[in-house]
Length: 508
Figure (spheres, helix red, strand yellow):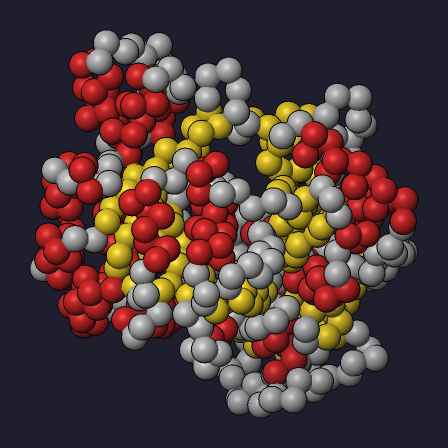
């Protein structure tokens, strides 16, 4: 949401005539010819320009910092607003007012200014409306040719074994292949019309509306027989942009993924919480997809997945699988998770544990006879436990430690490393909850868990550093790449030296 929106809401709720903004001054509302302060802090240098560029159409945004007056229309969920921008005596000033067709008092909860003290006008009114065509964020027509264009780019992405397609104004299309971004040779820089046209051609109608109103949106797109793609469309400084991530049509199996038998056993639990963690782009969704596929082939249960958006599509085998997409089939992760408890589930996958309430419901669900899988953006098993507990206020943390000690069954923290010779390979740290681990969680001594992991290798536990050094020893990953991916740099450096591996200068 553009940061100007709360100020525009205040404009309507106070039945004011206009909102006036100037660099170095507080925001003010104008009503009946007098001005009223709206904010306490003045706008910092350049802050107004940033606010305006967030809300202006792409063809206008580039002109906002110039000397010529600019006028455009901005629309959000509250209505439509006319923005007049001008630079006076070197200071950027803007006036925003409801479009005349809306009139004042369009906000149903308006309460007036409640007798605020009148503040003398300290900002000169902007210049008269310029003779410039008013622009607005309008719907982008769907052009079949643009769909053919983006389908071709996505086909090239899959053919080159790439993970992401990047679309940016002023740049040719770019592919991320084996972790590296590269521009497609021979392709001219994209214009804003081309980017918006390609995205509009594959975007569901609901997302087109969201994109116009909020300037970003998530959705999924599928090319039959090729792959599904998780897409994000957004607006940035130069105009429209988009990133599409390839999701194979075929779900990888646990054997193809190299998932250990000890981790596979987690799929046969009747209750508990299993977390798959790692940074963005580390393959969490692929690992979870393989685990759900194993369940689908081995158990006779009801599996509910809650995702944003749906990535891997699972067809019923032995299980019945219900897949719900946040924003399309449900309002949020937490509301879908609450509803899932009334849908006779055996296993629930939560695509992302985003907030305290979702985490709390997930832990309670795992305690009450369900197997719950979830993801977090943490890099180590111990860091995952700390992150979950730290989400809660101090007065609840002791209770959560007890609940987590009883419900947590395993943490798989993974990262992707570049392989020597091309491709990528997953390095997975594995924590399995045994009695000693549960006791440490319950007692608030998670920092001692690595010692338990070190002495429990036969049970299938392993720390990230040990996985990385094994990959280096096997010649699959370079010492430099492993060092970059390690979390304890000094300890890993000692491991490399002990094994006779050397880092090239600048690897740190």
